[in-house]
Length: 283
Image (cartoon, rainbow, N blue to C red; front, side, top):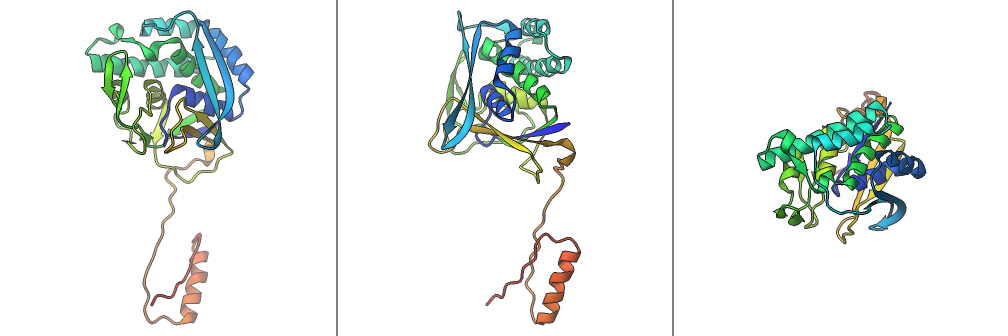
C-alpha cells in the first residue's frame, strides 16, 4: 500500500490533482479511456507544460454542448454508480461529493437533498473527482495526507456573484484544516480541490520527514509571477510514512571545557544517535 502527501503551498484544484497524480506514472490513455465510462460530453486533454520554470502535467476538460449544469446529489450519485468503476473508486468519489453538497447546503441554508451545485457539479468536476479517485486506486494509494493550504486572497466571481476568498463553500469545507494566505491575490483553493482534501486527507500536517519514491507535479490554469502554480504530490510506501518522527536541534554554550572533554562529547553524541554534532568557538 502507498501513501501520497500533497504539498498545497500553491493551493489545490481538481485539475491540479489530476495532473500531479498522472505525473506519478499512470498512463494518460488509460485515464481518458476510463473517464469515458462516465458517459459525459467532455473532451480530456493531457499535456506537459511549464509553470514558474518547472515541468508539470496539465489536464484540461472541455465540456461539449452546454456550459451550465445544476445537479443535486442524487444526480451525481446516479452518474457515478452507473459507471464501470471499482467499488473503492465509487466510494471515494461519492464521499467527496457528499462533502461538497453538505457544505453547499450549510452555507445556503438548504436541506441536503435540496442543495444543488453549479460550478462544482458540472461535467468537468465529475471528471476531476472520479478521476482523482481512479488514479489513487490505480497507484495503490491507501492514505492521503496534505500540507496546510494556501487559500489565496482577494475576490472571485461565481454563479452567486462576487465573493471573498476563500468563498463560503471552501471556507466551510476547510473547517479544522490549517489554512493561510500568502503571495498572490487570487483564489488558490477551489471548491473541488477543497472537497477532495476535506474528504480524503487522513491528516493535515506540515512536511514531515518523508521517504518517497516519486514526485508528481500538476499545473493550475493560471500563471503567477510570485509562485509556480503547481501542486506537488509525493508518493511512497505507506509503511515508511511517520508524521510523528521529528528532528530536534539542541544548542548550548559551554564555558571552561577542555578539548579532550569536547572531543569525547562528540563521540558520545553520535553513539547516542545524533544525526550531526558540531563545535564552534565563540568570541
